[in-house]
Length: 342
Image (cartoon, rainbow, N blue to C red; front, side, top):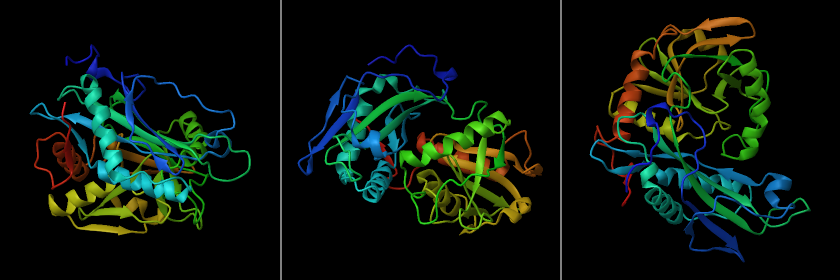
């Protein structure tokens, strides 16, 4: 296949329709075998469970072209497992890990000419999602579901690449105590929309959310987990039951320990500690790492010592190492990279 005629180096993080998507239906207590289709439209009842009671969850992962010309994906088994955790919490059927990975392989292979060339900085983003599809008027789980994966080529999540961003401490809570903050449910993101629109109007790129119970501990932002580097060069990762278990974060923790020899602390991080750190970044599938240069806490600006010009040196090493693994420049731990047969 020939690559599509796309300006790969100037892609934003937006939707571009590709040729194929994967779909599987759950009915009568079981999933069908799934198929690759061309139709990007979904038809369902106005009373579908997802429309009435927001019964849906989703994932996000990427496919890359390596320096050797292979197309690969990164740790899709963890996305499959996290989707299972989300589905269980929302009383949705469990999709087997093997079927999830099979769907990923098939949809990437089908859209191979949409995978951006190596070296452009762009990737093929995959959005697996599941939703209740049959009519539901009483408050209860749906009985029928669709699982789909679509793809779209994307550039960096934050425009300007790795330039540090400004964020603010939010007055809103991202998740309720003992709620759904630890799963990737669409309803969690719906609740964050007003907060992110407000932040953007005020000139900030993101919100920093505090723990919903005491509002004294740092949790995450609306779309990413948070990382800190302390003044001794150690990686510090906020820990909470209501933080989404980011696959990128877990991978960076492994890289920090096993590739870079850093000491890693996963613990509660108080807002009052913010000025003690040397570097701060947001991490997730979309951005990998986006450095933070300042945090505004209700008018008080806390400047991160690494500054507003570029990513701090330790986070840069983490970023370079993980992206090197993803792109095939650095040898990956066993099982992290899944090759797609074109």
